[in-house]
Length: 79
Image (tube, rainbow, N blue to C red):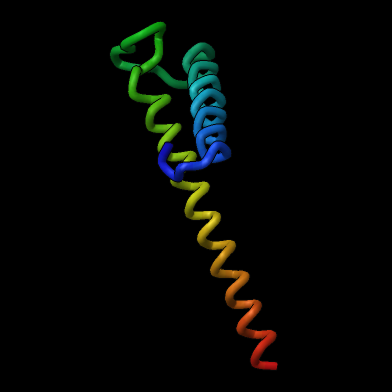
């Protein structure tokens, strides 16, 4: 659990599942092709990358939202 929260873990699992499913649909329809699939026509590292990427993007979004709230609060104090 990268960000030590249940919501982050759930987001990571959900993103990993959905993104792997979409990539599998692309492979099935011939849009994309793996050179050597590892397990059940899936590259074994792919869900791990999606999991880590989902948590990372969630953390970046959270930090951007906090930064925006700080800017709004500073602006209201200046006025």
